[in-house]
Image (cartoon, rainbow, N blue to C red; front, side, top):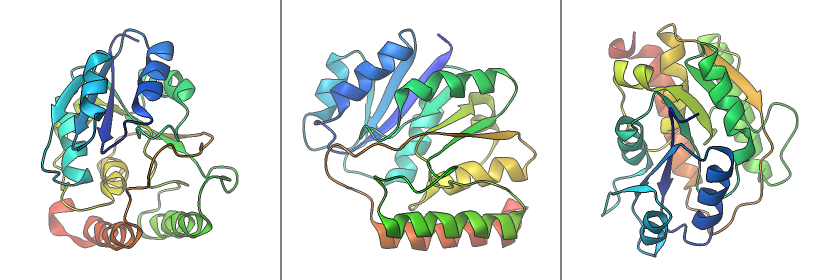
Amino acid sequence: MSDTSVVMITLNEEKAISKVINDIKTVLPRSEILIVDSSSDQTPEIAANLGCKVIRQFPPKGYGKAMELALLSAGNNIIITLDCDDTYPTEKIPELVYWIEQGFDIVNASRLANKKPKNMPFGNYLANRFFAYAIKVLFGISITDAHSGMRGYKREMIHNLQWHPDGAAFPVELLIKPIQKGYKMKEISIEYNERVGEVTMRRFSSTWWTIKRLYNLKFSKENN
C-alpha cells in the first residue's frame, strides 16, 4: 500500500492529530500523509514532526479550497480522505484501498448504511438521510452518506475532472460528479466515533451549500 496518499484538512486539531497520524501509520506504514492546514494552534508543527507533508493555507480559504488543494497535491495513485478529528475508523483504510485496487474509482465510507450513529446529532442524521433521498430522486444514485469525510479516490479521476470547490459541502460534488461522468463507485459501511476537539462545521452553511450543489449538478449546463 505504498502507492497510497492519506490527505486531511486541519483547523486547530492539536488534540487529535497525533493519535490520528499514528493510527494511519499503524495500518499504512508506507503511505504518504499530507495535510492542508489553516490552524492557529500547534497542529502543523505536530504533523510535520511526525513526518507528514504540511501545506499551509493561511488565512483559511474554506474547506472546499483546502480539500481541492490536498487532492491535487497528493503524490500517489490512490488517495484516501480522512477527517482529522478521530471520528473515522483508520482501520478501514485498507478496505478502501482494496476496492480502489479492484477497479472502483470512488469508495464511499458510509456512517449511515445501517442505523443512526450514536455519536451523530439527530438533526445531522435527518439532514443526511434527506440528502441521500434527494440524490436518489434527482440523479438515480443510491448512496446513504453524501457528506462522508472518509473516501478513497483514484488520483487519475481527480485530475481528469473540473471541480468547483468554493463554499461548503464539497464532498457532495466529489461524490456525484464522477458518477455522472461514468466513474465507478462503491459504498462500504463504517462506524462513526466520538469527535476529539471542537466542532468546526457550520450546519446552516453546509445545508445551504448542499442544496446549491445538488441544483448545479442537476441543472447547470457546464455539469452536463
